[in-house]
Length: 226
Image (cartoon, rainbow, N blue to C red; front, side, top):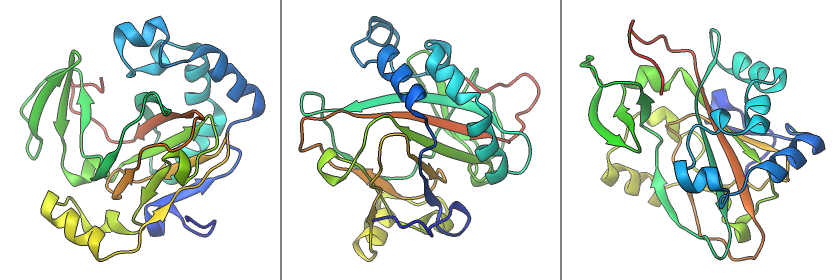
């Protein structure tokens, strides 16, 4: 289990306790649900544009202060997603790194590649330097342990750089992975390149997560985060 002494700088992951207050949790629970007509129609992306409770949290002094202290420069929210894992809506996520970002248009840039177009958005894998200027803050609306399919990580693996699938398998097989057990309101903070996975839930509770990505990387003129 991830311990309190783990830090983003040293380990690529850390847990911050009670980042969300009771009122913020209640507001998200009341407004956001995976079967909400907005999410059914438009998907789980760009939450801050769809729900006021998410926009308030993402732009709150608490979150912006955390991102500012972890990144050099002024952080900008570049992606907001929502997940809700239950027995009825359940999935397994294999070990991987978060290597993709979303942009408003496709443009040729040195080191950027493997472009795809999904859900009306351009996805691309940027150079490592871009990912090193990003941080993910996963806000937990519910408590999550291994029974609930919480996130598992391999601390320090972000330092290995961008890994191919066969390399990921070897690293995981020879490493000690750790579970991110959290209470409602806690945040798991990650470097995009840390190896992580999650198992299926084995209980009937919700495992709702607001996934926020911040970046200080300055894109070229005419290109914007989607």
